[in-house]
Image (tube, rainbow, N blue to C red; front, side, top):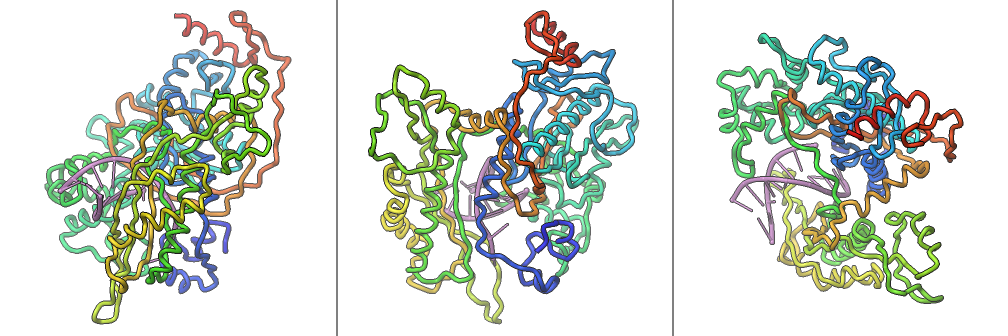
Length: 565
DNA sequence: CTGGGTGAGT
DNA sequence: ACTCACC
């Protein structure tokens, strides 16, 4: 097994490759089944909360486990207002509005890291400046991420989710790329956005998945595109590029609508895809959510065709699901009622470490007046439970098996006792299986036998958020953790990689600077504890008295000017 | 035969 | 409520 993604790829292993094919092309590959993604999930959470903790507007959106968009438009705007236009090379980026000493020095006359294209042509000074500042912020975030967690990362800087994601792939691993102006061009010349996108295979554009890509290819090629066996997943023999589509005869939003519309496709798909092909994506980076909208656990099986075995698996999935619910949906809240647990008094067994910031607790315990405890509380109540299966299709007459990824599902109200924190997970799971899941399973598979499942998924959905619009309840606590201490590095033994996303908009106007960050792999991390020291070289600000590093003083004083207006 | 997520259509 | 498309 290779720790190194490049080596792995060089040996012919690809993502989404069939195990059979992997063994053919690389006979000494070691295939590990039954993997536990728990540690990936933890790493993902760490990454997300770290980046989110920098955000001012809380627009931080995850894509899969290892990518995050940040809409940092507000931070860029604010910092532009602080710039000394006569000394841009000695700028200071303020990371916190309420504390102008928190930040870093940077040179606002240049981009940090690589750009695409590499050479800068004079154009659109406003957008250029915004992107330059964005690129320095990205570098700072990457440096801090690596210093504090050990994770290296790759970042794209542009004005939309679409463009930041794509351009971020240009320099991997452990680097960043800024898509630079001119985004659109005058005089019929092609801007950098269109020229950047033109050579992409159509299916590589985020938002154009396999189904849409096939429909488009079929239309452009005028026949059913061949999928050659042995080719990398998602690649076709006949490459259809964005340019091919854009310049195809009669092509436009209307044609695309006709080509793409069908059952399951959203209205206006033609317009949307047409915009995407031009690098236009006006979708916003979504606000961080206090709670997920769904939690699900699934497992796949070589063969699952008896009821006793199904019940056993349902029990296992139920346990995992309840455990996950308690981790992600339960938080500790202040409880004023004078209920300090007496010795020997039963306390619900559950792991709240991830939800509670321990310094808060210590702080609380210093309060002499009232015995305050943190009581576990549901941040949201799922109202629905859903059971999905993926049946393995019966053999064809000719003995082959058609592969299907179709799922069937059934939903039911989630019984209240599942939310009981006093009972052991085990006990709840057992009851859930017998009271509810068996019945749901029978609805999906009424026959006594004859079915064979390749997958079972158990989910809770339909979250009713509890009380206080706690958008900040959980994540912020974790976010503050980063500001307080170095976080222990968790080993990340994989070659995380590649996702891909969204939709479109005029890159032109005053649009968000967005960064798409992708987590790559781990480095050794020095087991670092850092001590905050007061720097004696700091000058004190004449206005607010705060100690400010000398190089940051000009920016700090401008901060007062702006603020006091 | 990966293990998750989100959002939309019907 | 259920399925599909997409990541």
